[in-house]
Image (cartoon, rainbow, N blue to C red; front, side, top):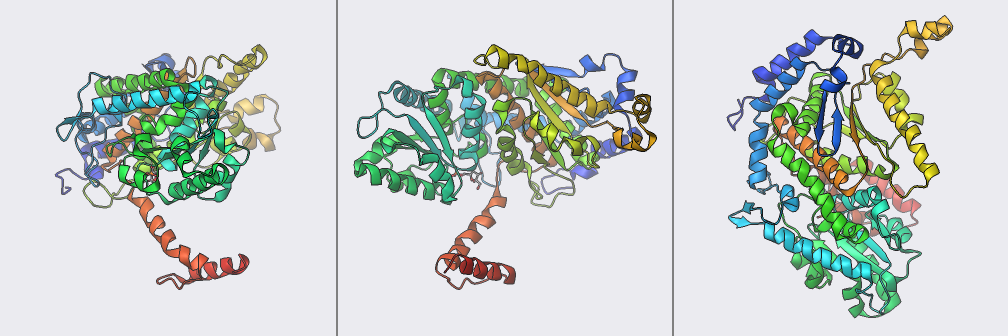
Length: 549
Ligand code: F6P
């Protein structure tokens, strides 16, 4: 029993039942499951919003799904979900509400945190963002010298970078192509250098995005960006026309020298990795315009409402979360691949890495005790078809079980030429072929029947049985992007709830930050740093020598 009155997850009857069921299923074959049920390919599908979700190619039966749902019920996933939507402080280690869903709530919704309705504030900021975005887009907001803003550089890291950077790529076809958007995150000076080297400072707007406004990478890059601007424009007053801030910390923004009138606010109940639909999305809104941004929020809301109200049997985020638990906890899968068949989703998996791994990469439960079960997987992947010519070999014939999500679209984006649009069928032929090959493989008999010499038969055999989810949408639109992101947000939520971990803190990133601060004087001044281990000491000495210090 836990301190919080819950039975340890791995001692619940539901967990034990799943372990037993896993044993009974043994090496169940997808070929057999499909042969036994002619309707499987349509029965094991769900729809949410524009998303058609096929989970038939999973190593599950009706019993598996029932047992997984029973686990979700025993761990009160829906109870925690309701507490989240109500604005309760379910981020217990930081004593904060978790309300990214309020960022896309309609104007007339009422969601209270500490007795205050947060929705009017959300819409006030959205309106202020829209007004500013329109002024930049129309040329009404000019730089210090009166020149039109043509370049927007978002300076932020983690959740203050990955979301808008990803979404900007995804929605490129909807962006104002006359604007150049760049994203600077790395404290490696090369990042800022490459982002600004060909820009005219007089035409450049910096958006400094940082929830805390204390993140060393962002503050450092922002300071260098300001020096670059002032070196060219030579007037402190220029900062007000070329720098705006996105933050929860007005005091630090003012301290940095940005007028808080040029600050777009959000709140401590928005986690960094759940924030790109808040003020953190300003760069995206400038690129795609407020209307498209609102369409994206509508997409988020479709999936929020589905997650909040759909019964367990048809609740897609619940299903996806539970499938991940099935493989991670009952098949020892260590990773999860997300393989979008859209070039525009090139940063989508990187975005999901933070969303999933910073949320659920934890070995301590809500009760303060170490968990005795696997938690979040390693999330990885790049767009198809590129991966097919790189690492798919390992997924097909390696020794590891890698469940994967395949995300594809029926229609190519509208602005492609007819010839390029025609390539879409080839892209999607690969998309469908891969999940088929992964699921059903190729038997030795099938290989032999092709006349392959016997010694090559084992090499050309595909065991198959690699589980995949296929997510198919009509077209890549702002709304569909919102739907996809909300789907993964809630999937991650489900898993954290079952594993009884706090998915909304990130203490694991702190130690490295503290140590970096301590080590820096050793590099720059050769200072004696207390407590350096022998390896790091020698590395620092070698670094200084190579650096010519
Ligand atoms: O170090 C991790 C982290 O706190 C993330 O959770 C966050 O998204 C990122 O740093 C950036 O933080 P901030 O927006 O406060 O600069």
